Amino acid sequence: DTGVSQNPRHKITKRGQNVTFRCDPISEHNRLYWYRQTLGQGPEFLTYFQNEAQLEKSRLLSDRFSAERPKGSFSTLEIQRTEQGDSAMYLCASSPSRGQGNEQYFGPGTRLTVT
Amino acid sequence: SQKIEQNSEALNIQEGKTATLTCNYTNYSPAYLQWYRQDPGRGPVFLLLIRENEKEKRKERLKVTFDTTLKQSLFHITASQPADSATYLCALDSGGSYIPTFGRGTSLIVHP
Image (cartoon, rainbow over all chains, first blue to last red; front, side):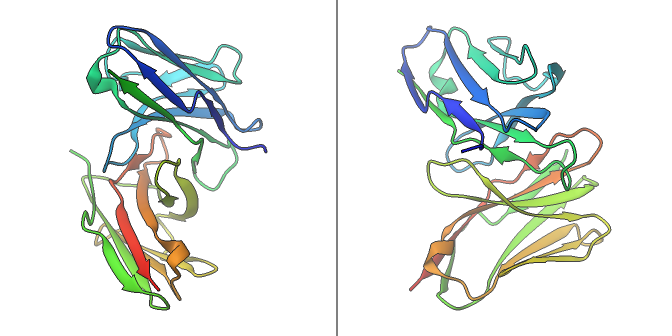
């Protein structure tokens, strides 16, 4: 399967703990995105990379959120000192450089529950 | 501020009928408008993209229209089937920033 993969699929953590999620995009896609989705809402943009460069990070929800894509391949999203309000689905997507128009190919998501 | 509106109420239709979903936007000049399907607990799946200079796009039983004067896109599924039941999201992209903005989606329920 050459789709976008995310790990873990589910994460339960206690408030105050740090969590890290991984995303492996479609190999030939150079743009990689992170979104957060809560129930009844559409995906909310957090940040994106073009190759290894993080081109937009001002919409990360707070300074507790950070993302990396060190070699332009997989990416990680870290949330430090988690809060109950961080509970959500975290989606990763990749987009080809020569697509129709920045269409997004999503992974299955990581469901985070903060207790 | 930019706003995308999709009907929050679920659309219920009978199998075989045409489903029509609406996406309205304000304070936005999108270069592309995209439609996605999302099933519960899964990531969205890209369906169709239409550019600002295109009026209509078709793919199998799907048809999308884009009216930049009305600031509206319509998404049609003809000969609907129960398997088409899902949430359908529209997303707008200005083309320059490479950052799509998603609507909240509309739930479609096709009854057999």
